[in-house]
Length: 125
Image (tube, rainbow, N blue to C red):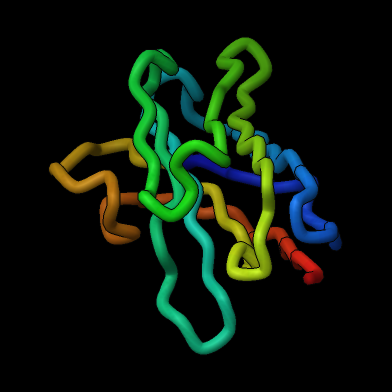
């Protein structure tokens, strides 16, 4: 079992920055890939970013590439999402997720077995 807890959400003005954190517990954190997803009202949950177990490989949605950075600290069992140049379109609930058994599609929420409760990010224009 894996437990995930996000933090760091809040209200920020357009153009501002925010860093989300996701603390993991349970299974060995460094064993699995971690991802960030987001869901805006009335929309499906969408992929934002993912990072391999070692942190060596990172993946981003086109909509956040160049603005967001995913990273992890396995010693602290934590994954981060640094969000710069925020836009109103970035407003959503952000979820971290753990992929403990890779089946081939990091960009799909179905790939991930464990999820946090989510943290709200609101960008005001």
